[in-house]
Image 1 (cartoon, rainbow, N blue to C red):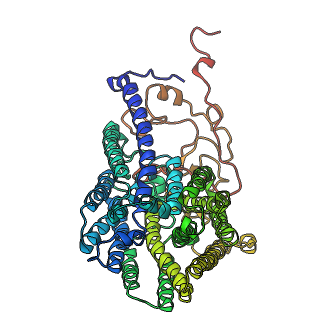
Image 2 (image 1 turned 180 degrees about the vertical axis):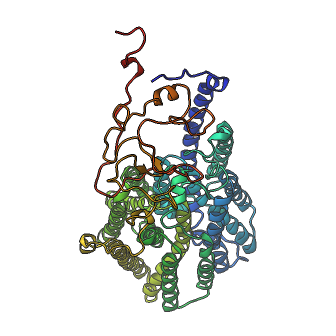
Image 3 (image 1 turned 135 degrees about the horizontal axis):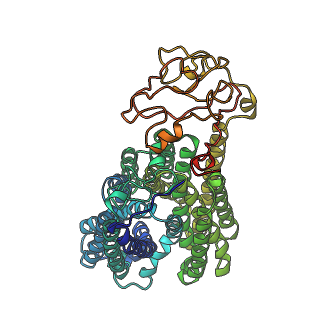
Length: 636
């Protein structure tokens, strides 16, 4: 068969240059984005803990310590209220400006913190910290979602490590501090570095968008509708590449509604503010328990996609409830004033836990989708093991002893978050993130209730230290029990969603409304109103509305070679359809008997022929003889 030669064009000649430019930009963009995630996520999470009590002795006499604690604690409620709105914004707007805006708010709050002189101004600055963190976290998640799986796994690992080290990072600048304002600006230089990286990401994002040709915007991998373009309405929704139209049309397991989390987030934030006004431990525990139950109910009612979507939301939510409150209490107990090694003894354990979390998250990112539910359950089981080591090994004055609990908590949280978010679409991931921070606040409320319940009888410094340790152990039991409940609930949901063996082996009932093509004697497409010739009748038969040149059982058609229409070669060489003239009208007489009817094709493209369900193989005509094999002039 002759192959027509390709004709080079100017666009083809210019393609290598554009391709090389397109290959260089994503690599630089991934490097900048990965560095940005490693810097900004800890900055956002470290703004959440309330650490003003550590420097309360440095407060002026005209400032109430209780009022300052209320004002400094506004960051986490502000984050809780901002994340659902930011999750909606990153799905409809470009991610880079939202990320830059969040970091700019953090920088402004850090810069103004050095001039704060009143409780009200501290409250305003802490709200700015919370809003900035609430913009940064969803924006970074949306930014890495359209990139490589490694960046998504890195995001989950950095989030897990940030939760583990947030309290220690927030307390580190306060060690030997001479001003209480240090609590308002813990890392101003690092915030400036993050702003520079965000600006570089913004420029590379625009360059990458401009390097894409307009006709490639719809192709898989084109992110005109992904996070770098105009949101995720048409982006990756199931586990494939961003912008994959087949996967996007199919829908994502667990597509959630981030705005639905605003109402419970507002209620939990109000409870957190009210708990600062001398609530009893019983009331605090009741409010925290009801908050967690409401969040799990919202995760069950607002996430579609069946059991997989709900299990993913449960996993992310329980990690928020357990990890950061546990890490905060472990850090407080291990301070040097309470007999621990202090912050200097905690950093080696945190470093080892961070490396292990990144390795574990990247390894989970390379697993197949079929094992992700098992991986998520395994990660939560590792978190339970870490809580058990907290109960058994801590407190300890030896730094090496701290490695095992922190590594187990970091690795388990990283594996659980990576497995849960990878099996979800971007909408479900953002919705789970909208539940994550209310879960963190509810976990702090529950942990505070446990602490207040234990600390009521402490009258001496030694009894106070023992009460803090007892509260940590009780919280480890409560947190581990909650994680176990989620593991069991997820296993039951997954098991109920799978068909049983008896149902799979049971023969299915006949369809009471079969398709027209499955009914014996029903006309096929293109033969409406025409009586079809039975297959046993001699002559031509009709298949999918078009006559075949073979007999009823693949026999040679009359007047020529087997299955070949005489005169078809000449007409094919002239560019006309066999059996028709150039004008498209029916041609002259054909050898053999004519068909019993002329087919009337339906308008539109010809449907793909479907094999008949009669148990016979479809008729395949033999290959057409070449004209060179026939006898002609000049051949012997």
